[in-house]
Length: 308
Image: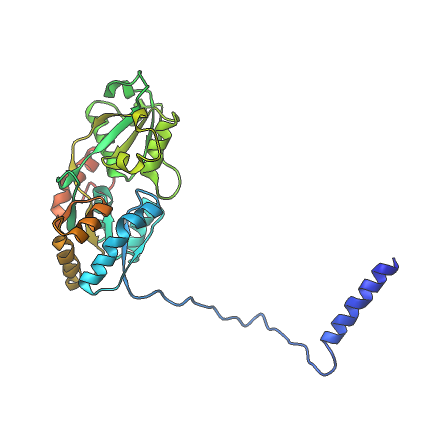
């Protein structure tokens, strides 16, 4: 008890000393507040890669491209990282992404918001189009044909993923396999990295089949035993990934960026490294009408975006 009284005495003495007669207490009026606004980011153009892979992969694949564009055009530019496909679209709508690099299905959605295609990529295969793949475990003997997928558990990338879902959905549709014919259709969880997660989930046996875009298996080949994954089939090809400028972006700026993209050449060692790191072979001009086959697919599947 004595020890407690001594502690209380010391505390009281300390408080009294802090508020001595020669120092007035500071009165705080909480009714008067000022909202502090963070300093705005630089006025650099924003460049976003649709998050089909993790942010780490997205940065690694495109940071050299962004640096090249900034140097070639003299326009300040920085890469931004939406967490999801839906957030990518919303950031375009809010004007937070100036240059979008996305799959064709996301493009037809942002085109409805005023974005316009100006360039599209050439795949490593040399084609300006790409496909989806349906994969399963190599030791899954119950799946040999598309019809064997009936009643199976399917994991896809995202409802808005072109190669990772919609191309496969269209292929199944053409073979009279509709969503209710699967025991489950799940989508890869979490932000970014969804293509990898599909492969890992199938590899782990959590799902019977998975749908990914061509090229994904090359990305994850160091993470799994590739012999355990079998490509059941590949979808038809559709126009490739597209560069689009947000609504209202100065056309002169878009033209400078397009010119720099078109100038990239596999014949130049430095530029070849930029292209190969980004997983592409080149960049060619694009027009909004190039993506009408994707709109036709969306309309066939009854999805929004197919009615533009």
